Length: 149
Image 1 (cartoon, rainbow, N blue to C red):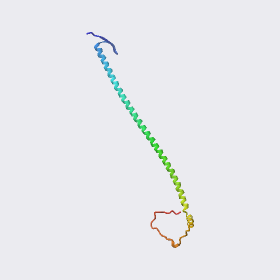
Image 2 (cartoon, rainbow, N blue to C red):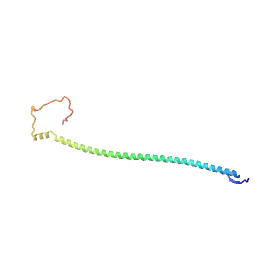
Image 3 (tube, rainbow, N blue to C red):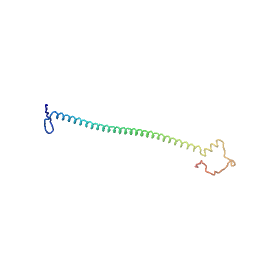
Image 4 (tube, rainbow, N blue to C red):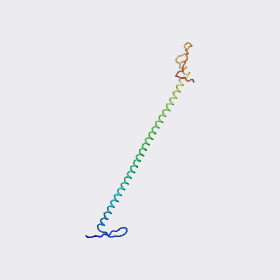
């Protein structure tokens, strides 16, 4: 049997080995390289998985923030619309109060005692005679009240 010797370089010294030893050494190195590659791939897969989780988390946070911003804009618009409606209602109320005050003033002017007397004289009315007047007293307070001025 022929023995072939190979020169291997190691970290400490150089030595000559047989062909079987060399093949065994090459097999071990290849197996170690496969194991290193497998570990590196597993580590890379782990890092990729972690990166994907961070990306998904960031996207989730982004979606939540966009939804909150949309809700904020919607609420702000509805508040603005409510304020505009309230302003319009207040303007209508002030107009109605002004109209009410004008009508009340007109009623008070038209219903004064002197104007009633004048209109009654124009219509030919006269004062009631003593036998035409009937007096009565109310025992319970009426639901209507008369303001004396």
